[in-house]
Amino acid sequence: MEGDFIKINEWLTPLSWFYGLGVNIRNFLFDTGMQKSRSFKTPVISVGNITVGGTGKTPHVEYLVRLLQDHLRLAVLSRGYKRKTNGFVIADDTTKMSDIGDEPFQMKQKFPKLTVAVDHSRADGICRLTKNDSKDADIDVVLLDDAFQHRQVKPGINILLVDYHRLIIYDKLLPAGRLREPLKGKNRADIVIVTKCPKDLKPMEFRVITKAMDLFPYQRLFFSTLDYDAPQPVFMEHGKHKVLGDLKDTNVLLLTGIASPRQLSEDLTPHVGSITPLTFADHHYFSQKDVELINSTFDAMPSPKCIITTEKDAVRLTATDGLSDDVRRNLYQQPVRVSLLLDQEETFNQYIIDYVRKNARRHITLKPRKVSTKADDTKAEDTKADETNADSTKTKRPHTISFR
Image 1: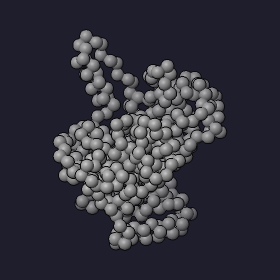
Image 2: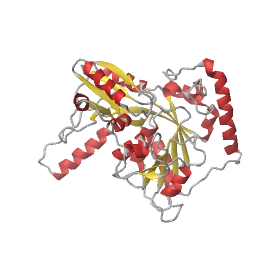
Image 3: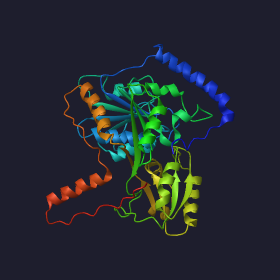
Image 4: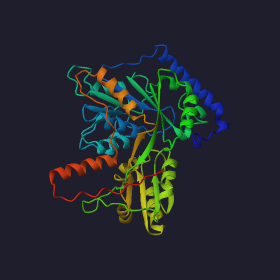
């Protein structure tokens, strides 16, 4: 049920009051114009939250990439959390994960043609990407990843993500809770998406949450859920991917370094034999001590067994030395996508497309369409193969785990 992941440290509430005072002063300076927020001629869409991690920002940014990438020149701009570089960095084929951070690196791997950049100052980063708003700018749309609190930029669309299991209306400010700013910060959002919802979200629950969120008439409320594709091997053996079969009798080491691993664990549990969790902090860089722990933990587990990790963790693990051959052979990443519930996809897509079409600085022919799922992508590939060779045998689709 909604709010079931919330844990409040009541004894820290006095410290939350002081924290909130500082945040309120900062927001007051921006609200009154004493601190300036900069607007841009290039369409800018921000995706973020007012809680500490775990709301699904990256999958929702990827949803927007899939929606727009066929017709527009997109750029994703992030801070590049925990990267080992400074200033503005734009990713290319030689960029290392440590240069831009795990999430931007993950996105560049999934969408090689996508422009991915990092800059601590989002305003400076947008200027660099759009060539200071010149008419010859290469970028049509900038997607800001995790920038709801970065108020130096005033995006054209501000999307706020709220975890279904940790609704902000029941949470408290840091350090007692996980809110990074008071609840009224949600008023800056143009779109609010309640993420990680159960697929069978009831209309009554939809109405209850809608009323409890207490949004303004100008704000749009949507609900999204997580979809899981077939786990993919992190390391390739002999240049080929292995297909992971049925997991119902498999012992799984769930290796995570993310803010909220509980959702993945609960979704995975009904489909595997058992789960052994091995949890690290969000964006954790694995040390040699960590590697030894991973190796020994997996070695002690009974067969059949495998390791499942997140896409974000996978990019850090591939840059880690010392993993045993057994771990490398059995390490899989769990791809995740989002889909919108309650037949809201067309409405959401149309809202985004209308904004882009209206504010783009060149003529764009862009029509609303369904954002493809993994199954859709596979079907399209199969159809193309059939048209190319009518006598060929239709490619077998990869096994897909359907959680919940």
